[in-house]
Image 1 (tube, rainbow, N blue to C red):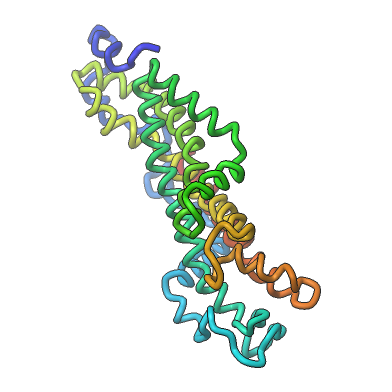
Image 2 (cartoon, rainbow, N blue to C red; image 1 turned 90 degrees about the vertical axis):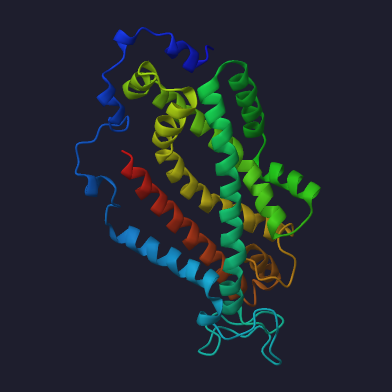
Length: 303
């Protein structure tokens, strides 16, 4: 595959557009007003999703505002108490308030998912941009590595990485982030190739723009709209992956209140204390569905 910037630099100038086309809008033409183009469509389901996600984020940032119980210390005589006015989600086998453990566990689950997506976004974007812009052998090598990573099940790959790194929230986030790199790289490469073929990018090269300048000012910014929506979508997937690792015992160690670990701790009491698994499981489901709903709305902006 021919290196695109060398090919364009030798292209006759008569095939390039006028210099004023450098300020052309992104590849997808849109006649809607600017305010409407970059605003989320209002729907009741979207509003509910925003509220749920906002509450989860506030839990992570200010847990002490939402509960006064210690999440790791049990209360004498309150073992396996059903939900009540004093303990709205009941207590666990050690007398710890389940609601407080869910609130304090949000920081581990949400921050871990954010770190995982951040790792994948940065590394995957770099690899995708290199593959889509340079082409040739570099693209072949990168995309073959991506194909190999995509052929391995996510859970198996994350377990393999976390066994090498060791247990813990940070290592679990790194492991989950590594499983997402290939997905981001493939998407970014596809977007870069599409934007590369647009008229205003060819005009930029025809007007004397250097490879790095055109890449930074035109190709990368116009390739990231769908990538941002995809990153939001993968945040929900990262929460599920981290919860799965926590459930299997590869995440945060006890007594750390992590959502997946809470579900694992309550599975032995599911017949007598249903709230121990139902409450944290419901929180995980609601947060993931809310993230997916918001990500779909973000994707509609670029259409």
